[in-house]
Amino acid sequence: MQLRPATSYDYTQRIAELIWSEDPALMLLEFKSFEIWEKVVAVEWLEAAAANSYATTVLAFAEGQVSGLINAFPSTEIKPRMEFSEGLSVGSQLSDDQFDHIDALFPSPPAQAYYILDIAVHAAQQAIGARVQIDCTS
Image 1 (cartoon, rainbow, N blue to C red):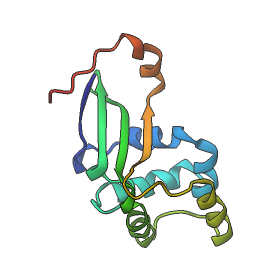
Image 2 (spheres, one colour; image 1 turned 90 degrees about the vertical axis):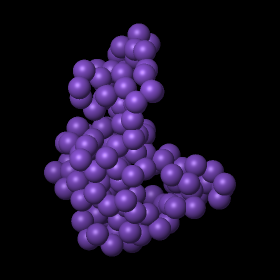
Image 3 (cartoon, rainbow, N blue to C red; image 1 turned 45 degrees about the vertical axis):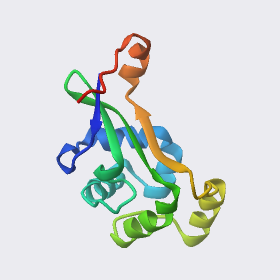
Image 4 (tube, rainbow, N blue to C red; image 1 turned 45 degrees about the horizontal axis):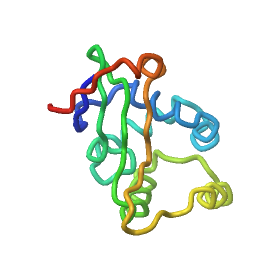
């Protein structure tokens, strides 16, 4: 397995699938369908200031395919990144009440913390994870 920073050229449907797999019930509530989510993340991916951006993502590759990812940034960037993503007009399908309720479930971390928005490993790699050697040299 190889880990490396993502680039804007790395986007594939598999990235959308990995993020969706973290919490499919919440994703379905917020985006109504995987197809809508896939369009959202494809647009956000290209924007360095967005919540789901290549600029804040590290990808894991196994056998030439994206097999995992982590998207993290300083917690002070949460609000501006979310607002930027909302401004792209391809985002959440939540009402204001639903958004407020979900927002209350995820309290803001301390200002000095690092915020992990997404962390996912493809199911096939989870099964063999204990036997995989990770190469972080690239």
